[in-house]
Amino acid sequence: MTEERQKAIWAIYVWCRRTDELVDGPNADYMNNSVLDRWEQRLEDIFNNKPYDMLDAALTDTICKFPLDIKPFKDMIDGMRMDTRKSRYANFQELYMYCYCVAGTVGLMSVPIMGIAPESCVSAQTVYNAALHLGIGNQLTNILRDVGEDALRGRVYLPQDELAQFGIRDEDVFARKVTDQWREFMKEQIRRARFYFNLAEEGASHLNKASRWPVWSSLILYMKILDAIEENDYDNLTKRAYVGRAKKLVTLPVSYARALSLPSLAIQ
Image (cartoon, rainbow, N blue to C red):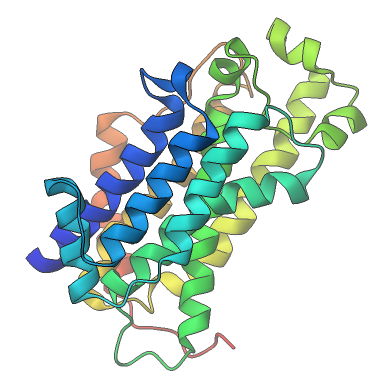
């Protein structure tokens, strides 16, 4: 990526990281809605060219250079609010909204930085949708990778109705028992995550050529986490799926080759 784009993505990442730390960081025990309300006001100040500190200033500078919308940032804060009051999700519709807020928004924030290829013949909305789907796929993969760790914190980021369909209760998740029912349930969850990655692929090559490699790398590496869960025989309750350094290095030239591909005209 160009140096200007690198700095802009860094500024967005730092803001997202700081936002997440409010809920998951060392001071999370002191978290309440008033803290998030103040953080949202601070966000509005950033967009009004009134940064509070140097890290805020980095995002203010990015906003001056790229056409960023404040809505995805506010929606991410809403996702943090969800984390403070919910530890269960009744169905995938509820879980999707959470994934959108905490991860799909990052895709929407990033597209104005990444840029759309001048030679692309699809609508900007198509590219934004693909970025959103990449965020959803990434977050679903995070959830599947971290099921065991989340269970230790009393959290189950899985659709309750779908767990019930496979005869699985929260108590089974907390007991960290890998049963045949759990394996079948996991197969369906992995299939869904891959569905969103497939949708993301449809737009990745329509980004500006200079931005495609990191996006393709992220997409392929996250899909390999799903492969790792399968290789662990769907035991994501006592084992953490990860992609080793060697596999990551092998992935880079593959993703680079995909990044060189011209935008397809087949997308409607």
